[in-house]
Structures are given as C-alpha cells and as structure tokens.
Amino acid sequence: MAKLFESIGKLGLALAIGGGVVNSALFNVDAGHRAVIFDRFRGVQEIVVGEGTHFLIPWVQKPIVFDCRSRPRNVPVITGSKDLQNVNITLRILFRPVASQLPRIFTSIGEDYDERVLPSITTEVLKAVVARFDAGELITQRELVSRQVSEDLTERANTFGLILDDVSLTHLTFGKEFTEAVEMKQVAQQEAERARFVVEKAEQQKQAAIISAEGDSQAALLIANSLMAAGDGLVELRKLEAAEDIAFQLSRSRNITYLPPGQSTLLQLPQ
Image (tube, rainbow, N blue to C red):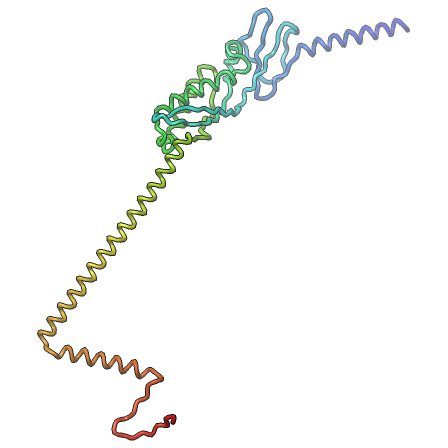
C-alpha cells in the first residue's frame, strides 16, 4: 500500500513538472497582435509570430508581443510661421507598426517605439511645413497645410517601419499679440464700413436734393411759360379748382350749415 502511494506521488510530481514545462513552452498571441522571439543564444529572430498559441523553448526563448492595431496619439507642437508668429498646433496621428518590420523595430528602437519616434518626427515635419506659410495662410489654407503635413510625415514614418492611417490638425491657435492684432483689424474694418455707409448715405441725400431742386425748377419754368402763353386763364382755372376742393371739404364737415340765397331763415340763437 505504501508503495502504491509512493508511486502515485511520484506520478503526480512528474505530471506537475511536465505540466509546468509544457505551460512555460506555450504562449498566446491575441487578435491584432504579433510577436517577436528573442533567443538567448541567437538574438532576435527574423520570424514574426502571428495570432494563436505557439511553442517556444523554455528559459531560452522569450516572446515580445506588439499591438499592431491602429492607435491614436496627440502631439502638441509650438512653432513659428513664415511671418514669425507663434503657432500652437496639436496633431492627431493614427498609427500602427509594419508587422514584417517588427524585429528591426524591436532591435533598433525598442518596445516603446511610439514614444521615441512620433514626437520627434512630428515636431520636425510640423516646423518645416508651418514655416512655409504665414499666419493668415495657415487659417485660409488649412486643408493644404494638413495635406502637406500628412504626406511629409507619412514618408518620414515609413523609414522607421510605421504606417500612419490618419493625420489631422485638431488644434490651431496663435500667440496673444497676433490675436489682439486680428481683433483690432476687425474693429478697424467695421469702422471703415460704417464710415463708408455714412458717406454713401450723404451722397444719396445730396443727389436727391439736387434732383428735387431740378424738378421744382422745371415745374416753375413750365408754369411761367403757361402763364405767358395763356395769360390769366390758367390762374383763374387754378382758383376754380382750389375753390371746388374747399367746397368739397366744407360739405363733409358737420359744423357747416348752408343757407339758400334770397330766403330768410329764422335761426334760434341763444340770447
């Protein structure tokens, strides 16, 4: 019986040791990840391990897993424009490593390749591109600036084995002096527009007065010519028209009473 327990104990110990060895010889690579194998005797292997469960030699080989999915990163940069204005720019980058170049990336840069590469190349490219434009062009030609930054930065990142899926300018501001200058310019433009409106209004009023005076002059001339041609007949006609208009207005008033001519009418007037 003792020998049986001893045999079972030895078997369990062997199974535990064997399980530990098997477990240490297996490693998993999750979806969207890749692994690089570091061998203690041969260094970093050129083979990139894909997703799934894989074997390695325990204590001799070590897996280094990289995330190959696109990841975002914001890089703030302070630089100068063509007209020497301070510009604060924040660039949003969506990046991922080239899976086939992971051994070179790990050997030459390290696991934290994004921390070592992206800030430096982003600052370099942004300073070079922004220096080609003045402050006004950075606002009016923002799409062109963003495209040139994307092209130059993508080309620069490829030399380090990185793929940039998207590059966009998310924040663009200028120094305090430039902002105040822009505000003063806008106020001056508004004042100039207001002054121009006042001048145009005065000019229109002047033209209206001239036209009105010319009209009155022409009317007076026509009347004078008519009087010379028709004598007093025109004046008598105007008198009759005026009298007719007065009579019409008086006929509509309740405070006016007409007495027929040649008749005596008795009015009850207060004593």
